[in-house]
Image (tube, rainbow, N blue to C red; front, side):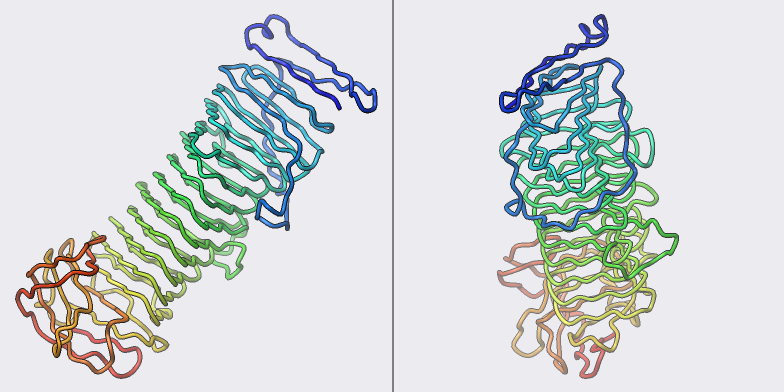
Length: 475
């Protein structure tokens, strides 16, 4: 077995120029050469590398290890893997591999870039690694799939100033699969923070992302988020799929975003700032999601489907939930607030807006989309026909007129033109009374109370839920 261990010092190699170290393979007697030079450069692959294997780490084996101990502008690399070559330059490490089952372990701090090119699926373990690149990509990958493992108990930081829109602080021309319960901090001072050409799957990891453009992005492949914590501050979109086609919208699942769980705090501040932006469809099956965006908070070109989770979406200049196609809600809790009351909480361009379950609350203008005929759950729209139902910022409770069973208790955060409420606690053809003021002993999350007891305030009127589809009462 061959073993190559070398140390690069930026100052020494500026004077020495080139250093070559050789080691003999104990198994076959061959000699391998590792070259250390000051003329290495960063090459960014724009050719998409495809992969159809499982994203479950347990379905893969990584029995070979290359360790990269970073220190300033130098690094000590330990490599005993046939088919892996390492070129170290001034502030740059280039690793090329044809070997399978290789795990690259990065530790320490480095000023420059680390580049890994592999024809095989790879695993990159960040074990307290910090990489800072003032011109280009911090961690530059070109492999069909890379498992990026943030070691438990560690904080890993990638800071970069990418030089073009085809770059990011963390980039792979194949697929990225994030795992490990450590923290991954990514800062991009230009363009995107994380960009993959063949999709992203993420679980466990705590992400802290600051981006001059998009936070997490893929092209022509989906994003699947199973768990983890995502704190993203972006100028443009927080989490986004894009298309290489000029066609505005597509039903292709290659452009979908699927959220199965996790905790999300997304802030998007620019004129194009959106929290989630799916080029096709966005499906939210679970998770705790808080989005504050200048533009649409939750956006998709084809469909937004919510089956579970807790979502609080706020837009300061546009809509909270905006689909250029359809809206489907069957579970979870979705609260949308358009702080600019010229905009709406739910917008689907008069396409299908189907509610079969879940709790929905929306504040905005009177142009809001309303449920269509396939809906089965009753809803009420306050303030559309009668301005006396525009209560402003106040505690509101809706309860059955007979028996006083509460449907919803909600602290309205601002003035509005219309307030939309849909709840599985509504039954068709039943009279309900609306109260404002009073008090609740329950627990409020994003203004919506759960548990506890509501003490009635002032009655503001009654309404009866509709008995025919789309089961909408308008006041």
